[in-house]
Amino acid sequence: MQAHHTAGTFALSAADLAPLHRNCVFESDEHVQSHGKLGSELTGHVIRWGRGAVDTAVHKGAFDRMQVYLVRYGAEVHIESDTFDDFSLVHMPLRNGMQLDVDGARLNVTTGQAVFVSPRSSLRLHCLAGSERLLLKVPNDLLHEASSGPEKRTGSWSAGFVLPRALNVQWTLLMHSLLGTLSLPRDVSLNTDWLAHFERSVALFIAGNSSAEPRIDRQHGHTAPPVDRLDKLALADGGRRMEKVLDYMRMRLGAPISLHDLARAGCVSERTLNMLCHRFCGTPPMELLRNMRLDALRSRLLMQPGANITAVAFELGFSHPGRLAAYYKARFEELPSETRGRHH
Image (tube, rainbow, N blue to C red; front, side):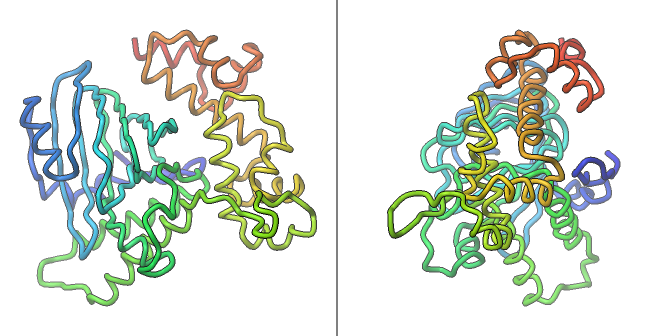
């Protein structure tokens, strides 16, 4: 796996992951042993094995308060997990995508993206055969401290949140630096204050970009309307407002959505929404929505090779099959049928 930097992604190289490969927690080709070992490292879960041979491997690196895992199953897996008691996870697929249902919301995650998971009621996870992913395990008390102090309660951030592509590079560089601390010679020790500060910085990046709480007009008790006089404030608080828009898109991916709907979701004017989308994602709002739908379609075709392309496209909000083919080929350099055909 070579490092590359294209279209808002920056892959971790084999050299970046080498410190994890040197610390193997376990390897197994047995269903029961794999299930038990994974549960003891993370949390209780039910796992159903699909296509492919079981070839499980877990590698681990530990910092002061966080742990990072490199996880491979080999076979396709469907997992139903217990909720997390005192930690949250950030998943980052390194090979093949994944699909998560977090508290009823479906998240499709492609290679190189990062997804924050902190379920309150339920978590289901589907990984394709041959999947490999990086997991960062973060104590919730560290997230509390980094965001607003120890008094902040659990639930102050989204239960499930896909990091915008515009922030993928920053997240990957953080992971690059974090993994780099594991590769230091044994006779070199990091300053403990610096390491604590760095871990808080990673936690702040997560907490600061995963809040899904709507902005409430306290006087009237409803979501504040998008008005032009808020443009300067909206731009200053752009990241948080952009996340509201992205969450709105994800939750209503197959529904008819207008530019006005997206502006209201972010509590901004349409002009400000356009500026925010270009600033954080490099594309206009409706093109961003279309790309999100295209990514979801590709993920579905990779995970369900027998899926009916037209039916899935309609489900995801595409009403013009001819235009869909052109958009899809422009984004992925192949047609939907070619994506599906390669995985039969």
